[in-house]
Length: 381
Ligand code: GN1
Ligand code: MG
Image: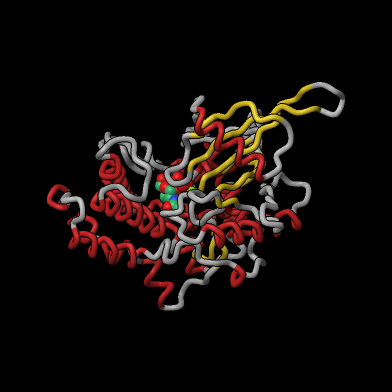
């Protein structure tokens, strides 16, 4: 579940207050909670008191986010993508729960971002909800699969050429490997000598891990509009019914392959352990969770997917898991410059956990492929 940390740092409070003024948030700023979810951006729930229209006070909250401009070098392009995509979804689903990004008019122009000299900020509506980092409840997992499948379906007629590549080659596994190899040569933090086992494993499975990149380069997989960061905690659920409400974290919505979304979701949700567990003897793929997600996802997408796309969904889980192992290991080697870390070996532990998961996926690949095939037949015929 999402964990919020109650803090009262006066500097942060002042900054959030000022950001709220720039975005014309109504009412009186009175408190904030730091939301500790997410490995890249910094998120705060900001709470305002205002008149409820009858002279009584009510509390209304918003989410303020500071974008990580190390990860997102072109934050304006990120916000332009998000504005286009959220507007498109709102027009198609006017009655659904949607994300609304607030505007400034600091320079006479309405913008969904504020550059305050150091950082880029944005404000989005707060949706009362609950999130999950994992779930044993297969209905919740199924709902997550439906939500990400539906996200892709609703954007299937969105013109992908309108979107910037907010992080170029984000899921280009082969380029991720190339970067790892270059950074091993640089050895900026002097850590390569400690991670030879991990490097050796990842290089030994390189071609299998690059399956999506290879098939795309051959022209065998179509480009779609994908979310690209399909962790289960990027879906908001109704607190009471646990129905999925809305998909969040649209920073990486870009043209992509269906396997990116399917593979990343499984890597995160169907692992017996958290993605940064140091107890890798417990790490592995839970086939029940896999089935629940696959059934939900394919119930929304199977009719649109090509046979080749469906055939590569199982392999895409292995690909994206290895890709994340490469990225975590790469960041460890570089001295932890990209992902937020809680302790010095955090990225190495994450990489080891992804490697353990990838190994278990290979053992279970036949079962994964059979489940995908069964779901596809059920929904596609
Ligand atoms: C980052 O921001 P967050 O926590 O949703 C990362 C993803 C990784 C994930 C691993 C822009 O996602 O690619 O899969 O951490 N996002 C970016 O937890 O790099
Ligand atoms: Mg993200």
